[in-house]
Image 1 (cartoon, rainbow over the protein chains, first blue to last red):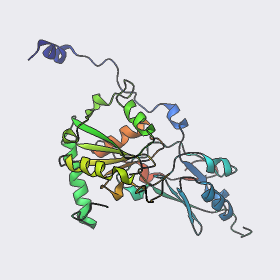
Image 2: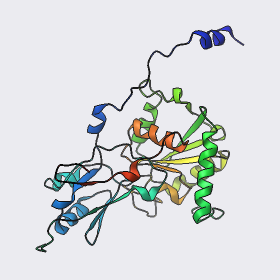
Image 3: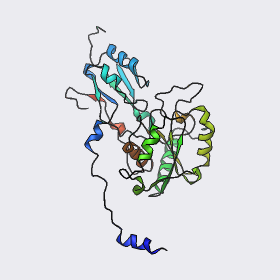
Image 4: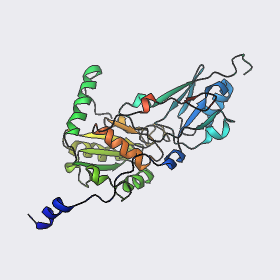
Length: 115
Length: 172
């Protein structure tokens, strides 16, 4: 065995370690939306669903469904939502369970029914 | 197209998936990755390539890229599984020795962006079984790293506990 190998084992040092935590700027990367459910109405939810180019948003009665797997974090829904949606800051979304990526948000606004 | 005729269902499928993940963890700090492009725009590839750069340096975690599927333990599949790539993907999958895992990388591979039509399957899991899904368009190298560590059982996923419902203070 080459002597450099043993020398490396004996004297090799780690010069740089991984950071202890994820850098703060990671939360500013484009990320899927999170919703203020109290400000969501059915009419607004339908507008967001229509605007979603990736087909990640859908609505079932009073529930907004976001498939994180399909979401491209393009920000169209956040722009349209008038404050009802904002970037979630979550970009570490890997999962062994595909169905776990489908998130639901209740639509709590507009209960009196003018939409 | 899906080649899942011999795949078990239900509880058995859970056990089988768990066993395969445990088997992968046996690879410890020497796991070899083959990337497969099924029609991606190459941005996912660009992020995957960054994993090997000094900042993320995935080699120190024991992951290595290999050009040969016969040397690979894990496939990272990008793109919406275009039908023209069926042969490529199935042959690569068949050539990868067991136990193996497949990671579907990016929104295309998970059904966003391209619908199922005459040209594409829409999602990778219609062609080969997928073990870990990594969302993002593209997923950041950090997200890819998280997916890899989940695939070998060195991290547990946290997305299932994630709530996207915010209260008035903007907290989930």
